[in-house]
Image 1 (cartoon, rainbow, N blue to C red):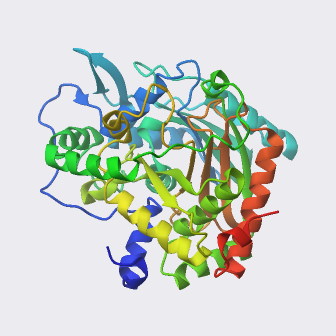
Image 2 (spheres, rainbow, N blue to C red):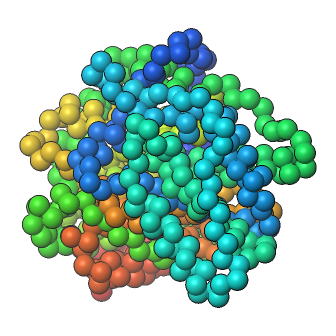
Length: 477
């Protein structure tokens, strides 16, 4: 495979967009047809993985995703409620439930509801600290409440008036119906466009969708051929042979504690200057910003664990490789493993190129669900845990320019659970790269997370300033 550095600027931009889950490289093989049957549809492969993993910890809402959409203008609660009904009408996945039919999990699309339940909380007369505390309490309670996947709407929301000109839509969605593109791009852009049209007395200005998520799920089951499955499984069998996750950092507590799947969230923001320097480093080496962040993570974990053979997970938007699904709400992600050998103590620049190449290979072999890979490779009896990586990192897609009318964030509240030991999700914000760190408190102490956050920032700044240094010389003290 040729070096990423040799790609044209346009191709590098496309790869960058793919990694950021903004748009996937189109892979067309005949149009995805609309389903003719009104019978329950099969689950998409990505949905199936979520529901399988959720069975490992049924008492914890592992896959409740908190989302906050902030409007910097007055909002009419009734108009917003009608707008949400239109979103649910347009996107069947947001009025879908799951059930078992003839022993198989299926998705059942419900009729368009007459209304969308949207409680309204008015905090405009409260002091600022009380407003923020009130929203946090509301969001925590909403996110910690499990969904009944058979009958509950899988998106719930509350509208909060923070001031006369600032309204927050505090949402919780089951992860099986949203991904980064849904949260940061499709939903807020559609909602605001619909709201503006309705407020002006006009109908929905958006064209009808060419297909629905259930159509994609049905097509996906048919399209992924046996030869392609075998080819990709063979790639992962070779790539993950003898791979084991890090077990030496931190000092592990009991294995029973690891299976508790509890989760806390910490957050931090990289200074704009550091983020800009890291971005410049990526451009000068012909790699994506995601590769820069992942390389920093690899270097830090090598320092902490002493391992030279490391596997870090990420989420590939494998389902969004089709042009027809670019405008659909839904969960199109697939976990993939990025395995890199650091035993020769490469320079940070060399490791950058190595990581980028491995990422490129991984997303070229991401069609088979990771659960299938795990089962095919038969790693052992440690059921309920990922046998290849405990740590993961992602870079969420950028928001479209809203002209300051709205902004959106995710992972704003803890659900109480975490499927991984440590997951770092970066979000590109105007003030810098913002990160949410979800970790298992039964494994990591609070002080360890504080140290990790400090060391990551220091290491990235140092690597951007001295990219030719060997990684052993960049390790934080």
